Length: 245
Image (cartoon, rainbow, N blue to C red; front, side, top):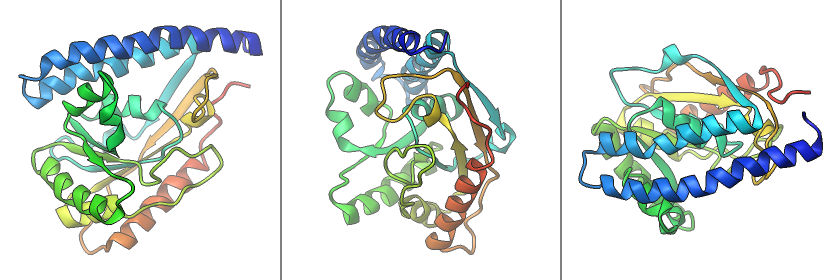
């Protein structure tokens, strides 16, 4: 079942449904604009749930999660997550409702998908203007947190291949210390099953670990991002392989 021709066939079947689903659901999502944010988000994020279910059916990608008890129910948080794949951008939508992503503004320019994404109130930054981007994350991020939304940040900024480590940027830590909200670190090995920029999807069980809350009191942003990096990378190194042999 894991031969190369079968991997191509299963991956192609996944994409044949995923792409029309994104377009169709994005267009339907535009109809939710009069609704309050929480209800908009609940509807819009259903495409992520459907995509993950279809990924499991067609490509055999499952997941196992530890640390769900670490997600607070009474306060929003700044989530800092390892970024290896497109998989985690889907899965995180199951965990935090509503949530605001920090993402590159170019995503909002995509027809249909970008318009629907804008309805979730993301923090869309210009990566080319680092100083202004950090200021925007701090100002808009605090607004989102104060409104009860969890803010999701990938501190490496871009997807990195399994076994490698990107540069951990301090923007998320600066937001957390400025706004006074705790950090929730998350790590995983989804890149083994759904490689970055890869067409083939490999069957297996993605291992996800949600860490303990990291309070920000008494910490500088440098100390905080350092602690996040150590926890994410050290925990990642202990995970069993995701991909089936």
